[in-house]
Image 1: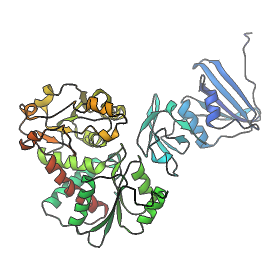
Image 2 (image 1 turned 30 degrees about the horizontal axis):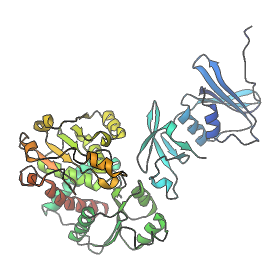
Image 3 (image 1 turned 180 degrees about the vertical axis):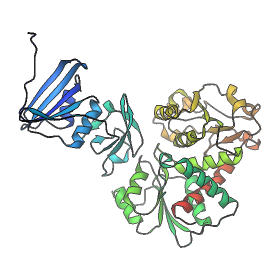
Length: 151
Length: 300
């Protein structure tokens, strides 16, 4: 039997699979999983039939909000989500890039009103491949790697 | 339509309706009445033409206005937030016309107050009333907005009027030529939008060969105030200068537009040619702003 590294299963929680290789740490940052109470396993550059290489994150006892799920799609558009209960997969879903993103993205334009007045940012999806977003206030368009996230 | 913030929000139908309304106001076919209404002209960033143009439009409609120009003598200087300034002003006025150097300030204003907000320029972003008056001028001189060949020259990167105008015209099957110094080219995001809409455009260095094909040439000033280093300004300021000689082979219907103020990019000799249209363009601005106020205030 072929030997391979594997990431242990979790009892209950969320698995974020098919993360673009090398992006797992960014996902952790993005959805703020760094708190010490999160029991988490991370696989980086695992081999994948579908993607060649992929990252994976397994989080014990944590269900992600819709906002968190959608924001993952911005940095890893092909990621999928698996909800586990008692070692069983109870739900699988492909993450979809949201058309509108309220809050969370910090506009990189220092002259944008969202960086000056107290106002929640609003971005719209301006391109899917590569992912680009446009600020609804200053109307500037940015590649997803140019923006910072805040939760 | 409650506010006018960005040409992105304005549909082709809205554009045509506003053009029609401006023509009716100019021809005295309709007489909208703004009496008893007060417009707040909040020019956080000073402006002469746009400020006076709006003030004229309000007064011609029978309304009244109060003004602010710059922030040196206001509560903004004392540290008041924009939201608080706007909330207070909205207790006095029936609508707000606002220019601000902060990008997105007009959209923020429209979301903060209950009264209509008209964007009179937000940083390098949008200047929709200028785009509307430019469209009105083009329609008046060409009889149509459809299928025109239009050159935009000068500062296409920082000049917000050309961004709004290119977006607005893209609904009308134009052919664009863009000519600008290398560092002041049309931003990529505008070019991407035009490509996505299937609009034909070409970036050219030499404008002489395109002159006989043009219906409209839209000239913009290289804006000295937007350069951090004066040397950089000196290098590009004379890149494109329109002279009567340049206009020798243009078509009969050709018109030259400029949002003003001009410095030296169109020589004063050109003013006497039948192609100069920039002062009439400024006059058209009053009719268009009357139309915009009429629509947002539901006067007819």
